[in-house]
Image 1 (cartoon, rainbow, N blue to C red):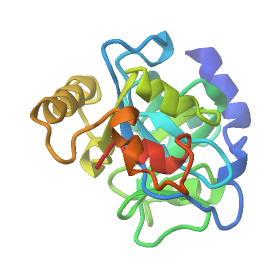
Image 2: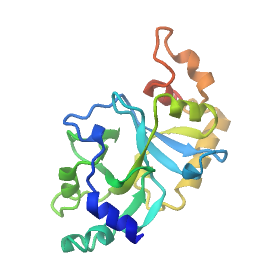
Image 3: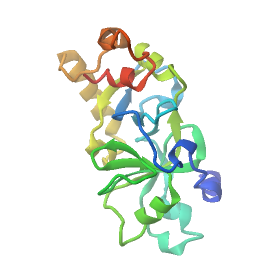
Length: 232
């Protein structure tokens, strides 16, 4: 983990372009993805993600249950002693830009450089926001820090859902900050599978099942609307 710590410390705010823009735009509500037991991509086996939909790019998000084996204090403490006691775990958010850092946090108002995940909860990689998150005066009680993120090209995520790689759930704000990171996957997998089996009106459905709901004029199935339609 030393190499990861050194790499992150060197370029920790190599910000993701679409989160570094003034006035971040999003294309609607975020979702949670739970890897199905049949997930073919070993990088995402037994993972839970929260995914947002920035305008003009594909979906992007972070893995919520992959600890990196270090804390924020381990990462920043050698250069910033005032942060040495921060015991927030660093999580591996995904394979894209692993030397960058993102964070999920509650905030009273929508920050300019952040994407909304749930009511009052946001995703960002902005350095100014980071300083607020680690400053005693402003620091929220709950927050999560991620090395790297996950992203999909046009149509890729919809195809993975249609092929059975992911189950889709509405964002659960409590799950974003669940202290039992190791047990998060099993709990949300049971929730997703149970909702599907019971045919709960909010249960995940396949793209084939919800395709008829897309307006005839309508949005292509690779759009954010298509992914979120798996959460009726």
